[in-house]
Length: 210
Image (cartoon, rainbow, N blue to C red; front, side, top):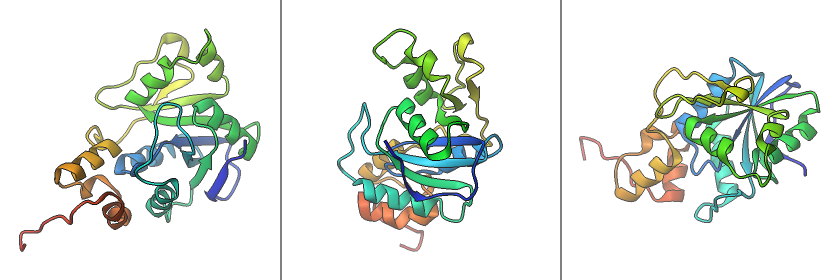
């Protein structure tokens, strides 16, 4: 399986951060995760899987979500954007190894809720996740609390500090705010506000003069 790059940062990183998500739509929290990770890795690649193992996205097409990620990350020289064939972290990690070389150190970026889902996912056989951690590690940001990994995983699952609280910033929160007519523009990067409005139907935010 080969990863398709829409934008690729120059150079060859020794430590690669991977932010894999549907980006439905991209949010300020996504960018905060990636920027925080640059203290620990050389490059962050935003990965949009063509197919997820546990979700389906039919409302907004992949090419529209790719376009939003490209706009949200424009001007960030250490950010790459790619589409993966696989949806599981191990599948994405293997595609990254093919694209970046077998020696690259891979760290997936996620919040506490996503980390719990990945660690507790049923991979079909005992010890499967522990074996996966030989291929990649997790950098986990706090989200409604800090994640405490099982003791045996602590070398491969590490905290990712953020400089502010992003608990209420998520793609789900954006879609729910749009659906209920509440302000949402502050949750997404300014560069994609109009595109989010066009794709998701959010009304323009009222000003005091209106």
